[in-house]
Amino acid sequence: MGEVLEISSSSDEGPVVPKAPGKDGSSWQRENSKLKQMNEHLERQVAGQRIQLDNSKKRLEEQSQELVAQSQEINAHHKEIQLQQEKLAALEARGTSELSIDTIKLDDMLSCDICAHLMYSPYLLLDCGHCYCEGCLKGWFNETLTRHIRAHPAYNMYRKPVPRDFPQILNTIGPYVSHPIQMQLQAVYNNSRQQQPEYTCPGCRKEVTGKPVVNFVVKDMVSIVGSVLGRPDTRPESSNIRGQQAGPFDCFFPR
Ligand SMILES: [Zn+2]
Ligand SMILES: [Zn+2]
Image (cartoon, rainbow, N blue to C red; front, side, top):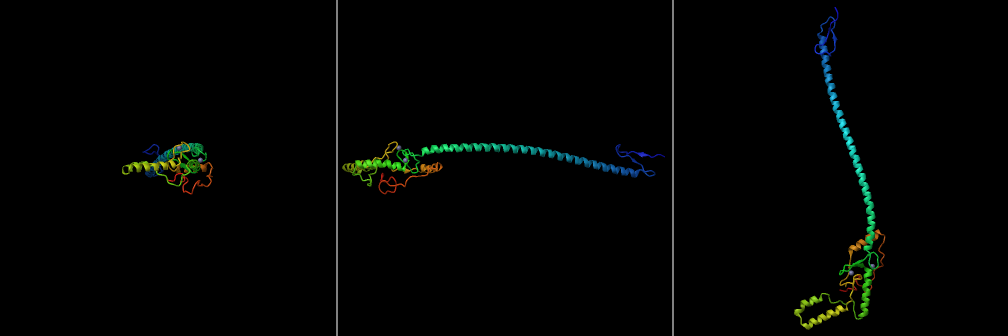
């Protein structure tokens, strides 16, 4: 009798298992179906792992694309930063040159029109707004005073003059005083004013009616511009031209 070959009933692809001679084929069949189950299980596992692998591959690809995009972005930022740095450098260069031009202009603006030096001690004339250095203004007023003393030898520079607003006061008190007294008071005022030297602005010649005041804005700017240009304050110690008054213009405006 020849060997009988049994082909798996459920699948054509299943393994062909020879029947053990002289024995019942059922144990082989059991073995066969067990192996088939295992095979199917393994195939499912492989398929599942393949799907996982595919997913991982996809994720990796996505991440790699993301990395490329980020690197491009970083490059773009880097270029932008370089551009900004170049612009900044250009602006700085321009700023320095503009500053030096401004300093020259400022030097001109902050210099005294009389002596052409930086006004380390600037004084403002309130009647016209002109500003000169202390030394030049004192010299100018002193010339006026000297001429005035020559013309009016009796002039006493320490005597307080009648205030400038006296005519207004006279108008107010007019109704309460007699006419002769009014005339007398007017004469006292006129006489006092005539005795006063008439100081003027050295630039516009407008009468200077009050003591010049320190121009603190110009003073601060001059100290900055002077230090930038390397020109320190070299004025000699200020000296009083006449008398021992506290302020530099007290002898010219004793009121
Ligand atoms: Zn001057
Ligand atoms: Zn003036």
